[in-house]
Structures are given as structure tokens and as C-alpha cells.
Image (cartoon, rainbow over all chains, first blue to last red; front, side, top):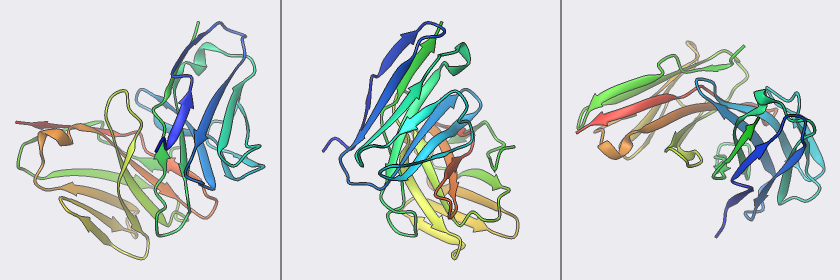
Length: 115
Length: 111
């Protein structure tokens, strides 16, 4: 049972380059999230999706775009990478937003360095 | 401005004693709260949660307390074990489906 899988696990980009991070979940979850983790800042929400074909901005959306064309996949794009986007990126998914089984399951993370 | 705050970056506790991790929030629309645990080089894993209609939830050694009037929640770990050493994140959600995390508290349980 794979759960939440992030691709790639590591990447080094040059300033101005573009890339897409892929998140795939096999739990048939409705909700998916992209976070970035920086020292002292915790996990900050970039974008999220409440279902196939829908996306919404989180706390720090600037410089990122997302797409949810299929229920199981949530893509995070960086059109023109900047050193400030050096971070560890986590994807998460959850089944409900309610009082039962609401916990989000996380992927292993993608460590991105922009030079 | 941070909606979920963990003001203690680190906590050190002796094995067998109680660990108390604290979390404050500012958004009164939050109605569901969760605690996650994170080891280095791994994704966070769910620990325990509480709905705003309750003030306490227990799961084995872990208990979460919610004080809505103070907009404060805490996680108690009793007894603490060396394997509990990790970073603990508090998170909150509301009807907008966002899941907002705090900055984390690094817990060290000394043998």
C-alpha cells in the first residue's frame, strides 16, 4: 500500500528554471495539499484542492501553480525558480474534513535546492 | 500573521516524566485540531486529534486538551519515552478545508 508518493525526492535547479513536483495518492482521498517546510517556519500551506478539477490558494501561494486533473494526482509547478524557493516540499491527502478520519497522510517530502 | 502558534521551539524531558506541548491559535473559525509527529527525513505522521465540541481526547499515552475560550490546546505525553523524541506540529482546520500548521516543537526525551 503506497499511500502518498512524491516524485522526485531530491532536485537541484538553477535560478529561472522550471519544474513540476508530482504527488500521487492511492487512497481515493478527496483533499490534497502542498506544504513547504523551512527552519523555524514549520509547515506552510502553498495550495490545496478539495476535489478533482479544483484548487485554492493557501498561505504562501506566490511563485507556485498547481493542477488536479485527476483525483489521485496533485501537481505543484514552479515556473521560474528562485533561491527563496529552496525548501522541503510535502504533499498530503485526506479523506474528509470532519470529525472522523480527517487526518492527512503525508508523503516523504521533496528536497529542492535552487542555486 | 501566523494563525497557529507554537511558541516553544524545543522541550527537554526526562524519560518517564510528562511532556506538555502547547499550541495557540487566533482563528475562532477553527473547529478541528490535530497533532502530528515528525522524524528527520520523513513526512509528518498523525498522532491525535480533537473536535471543538470536546475539551479532551485520549489515546494511550497521548492526551490532547482544548480550551476554546483561551484558543489554546496542549498535548500531554505520559510517560515520555526516548522514542517520542521528534518534532511535534499542531494543526487546525475550518470549513474552508485548509489545514494550517504551527512552527513545531522539538521534543527531546532524555534516558
